[in-house]
Every structure is written in structure tokens, then in C-alpha cells.
Length: 310
Image 1 (cartoon, rainbow, N blue to C red):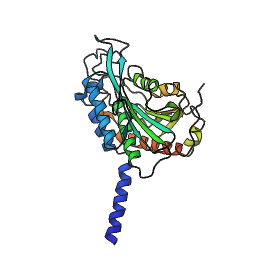
Image 2 (tube, rainbow, N blue to C red):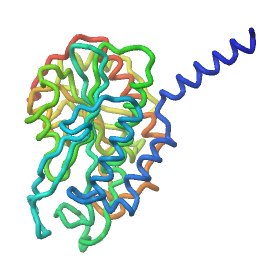
Image 3 (cartoon, rainbow, N blue to C red):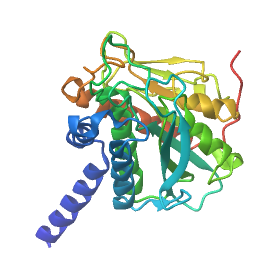
Image 4 (cartoon, rainbow, N blue to C red):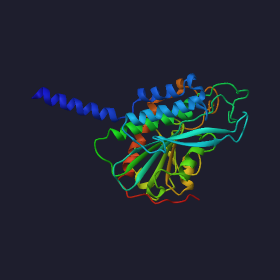
């Protein structure tokens, strides 16, 4: 009997542990997405499609229902505005997985998976960088790793949450939020059913002096109550604005409350030196644990009321 009880407790403990974000898993995702073999995941490239397939594979593994227009995928045509290549139109896709808790409203968690490829789409900040691989480990393999860890956490939770969760990896963000804007113009879930959107873009280079910034604090009436008494092992601060930074801006424009997680700029931003060995996976784990606390607190509230930020 004692052995049976011990085994049961061990199983439960392992189950709980499996739900927790882990540095090893974070680095596994980032190392794959930001490897030289992925050639910077430029929109329209075979490697960009491979990154999308990688995300879809993880979504399927975690049991998320496909909510694209073709399984997990929602295809669209992206335009390169600052053209330094012969073609300006690129095939792109969003990757969309749905955790259906049979709730009325849905929380959206998103991160973009594209980057600058080999520096030919016009947004590299390094001189003479055309032809060099821009791995984009922080921007935004770190956010995709966070997206996948949150998907793992909520799909393995034994208790059914009072909200559904829509997990989205956006394409063509670096070309002007084109993936998130396309989705919002062609939603596979009614916008009126969305509670709020949490965006993760560049969460892998934590600076303890700065802390993790969380934008969008002013976009809903309930955010102050949701943040109240929340603590974390990393320093964090809030900013009221919700209309800048990344794909959160597209949702804010549709009057959907947002939160935007970002660890700040650094000299490797949009250069060929944004590599996986510079990621602080332990700090990112703590950031994801903070995100979980905020999401769980938000689930205790009714649907949030959008407030514009002046």
C-alpha cells in the first residue's frame, strides 16, 4: 500500500513538474529555430515554412485543435516594402492552435516566428549584412519558445480553465505585422469572443538592471487588479501603451486588450549576431512563470473591457 501511494504521489509530482516551463525545453526550441540551417527564417523561404511546420508539430503534440484555414495553417501573401530582392511578394502563413475549454470567451497568446533571413529584405541594422544569416534567436525564437511552453503548460493542466486559449505563431511580422493583421481581417474565431491578447517578442535577453517590460497595462480596466500582489523572481515593470512593439499593436487597433512582454533592445538586434548562445533561458523560464500568474489571475475576472490609451 505504501509503495502504491508513493508511486501515485510521484506520478502526480511529475505531472505537475511537466506543466512548468523549463530552460532545457526553451533552449531546444530556440536552438532549432535559430540555427544556421534555418537561414534566418525569412518570409517566403523554405526555412520559414520549415519553422511553421515545427510549430504546427508541437501544437499537434500538445493536442491543440487546428484552427487555421488549412489545418493549423492560415496562408496569405506578404509584401516586402523595402525591396532589396527581385521579388516583393512572398508566400507566408500563420500557425493557429486552439485549446477548447468550451468557454464563451478566448484568450489569445501569440509570438511571431519569422525573422530577416539572409539580410535582403531591408531591415538589417548591420552594414554590409546582405547575404549573412540573421538567426534571430531573441527576435523572435525566444518568443516562439515561450509560446510553445505556455501551450504545453495549459494543455497539460488537469483542471479546465474558464476561458479557451488560442495559440498563434504569426508570419511576416518583420514586414509590418502582416500575419497578425491578416488574421484580424480574416479571423478563424470571432473577434468579439476574444478576451485579451498576450504577445511575446524578444523575451530571451533579460537584463536584471532593466527588468522585463510589460506593455498594455492601460488597455483594460481590470489590469491593475490582475497585477496586484503578483510577484516574480525577475524584475518587471509596466507601461500603459498597447499600440507599439509587435503584433499586440494589431490587436490593440481592433480594440482588444493586450499585454506585451519584452526584455529590451541590445546591440545584436536585427544583426547577424543575434544567436542562441546569448539567450538567458533561466530568466525566460521565470518570465513565463510570471505570464502564467497573470493569465491565471485574468481568468478569475469577467471578460476584460478595452480602454484606449491616450
